[in-house]
Amino acid sequence: MNSDLNQTSSGRVPAYVVGLDAGGTRTRAVLAPLREGEPEGEGVGGPGNALTVPGAQLTEHLVEAVAGAVPEGLRGRVVAVAGGFAGASRTAPDEPGRVKAHAALTVALRRLGIAAGSVEIHSDIEAAFASAPGSPADGLALVAGTGAVAARITARACTTTAGGDGWLLGDDGGGFWIGREAVRVALRMADGRGGPTALAASVGRALGVPQDVLPGEAPGPHAPGPWTRARREAYRMHLLPAVMERPPVRLAEFAPLVAEAARHEDAVAEGILDTAADHLTGYVRALDPRPGERVVATGGLLGPEGPLTAPLTVRLRSLGLTLDWVADGSWGAVALARLAV
Image 1: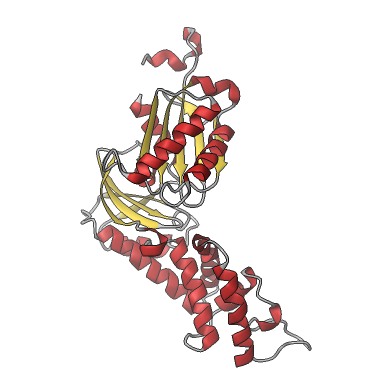
Image 2 (image 1 turned 45 degrees about the horizontal axis):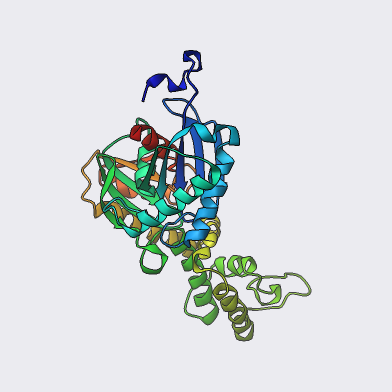
């Protein structure tokens, strides 16, 4: 395709690409010029995990994100779309997550009137790795958001993975795992198997447990007094149904409560984050990293404000590795769309 497609002075109509980062919590779409330049549109939709989100719902989330990124007047100028999807893989053409993601994206684009000549599906970790400066082709990638996975990237394709087995079977150290641990330690404190932690109160408040059965609540003349066995039982009887009636993956919403408690030196919360960092280090170590090798990291648990950044940095330093953080995979997906054309 001629490089002057984006040069309005040439008389050609400007062409665009769309990059998608479809993760366990949200889907983000970015519109960018074909050859170079900053994003010209962004849109956000619901979760985009290709294995766990039902096909019709996945399509709706993709429509929402792409529609927000691409104005109607520019939809006929999109020549390439690339999506990085959680739950998708390029290990085989008929890999289930890849097939499902491609089908949903094809329908979404058709509904929006986007007839791109190239529509490519990548894993979310491949897109995240490509988001690093220079759009690298080889190295290690680590994603720590709702889930957790590490991968070796060779020629921009994921060749080996560690972790990433989903909330039911794995993803230890990810946001779901941390949030589930928050509820577990709260229940252990309530039944006498665990030590004291501020998480019992914060998790209880987040789930709407009545204040009069929370530990250490309602100080003053109307204080309920010590956290008696009866109040603990009442706490458990309110907490358990509140957890069970929600989709399991929403336990990830409690990860920030752990980070907040750890900032206030809650020993139990600090222990959860330390164990999570150990899990992430184990994923990287399983890929036989070479000292000095690039590790591109993304996800809400890492980055400048991420609660696992500091402990993970210390652990990786002992392996001769440093983190190269990116916000998400949407810009990498743009780079992959450009390369496809």
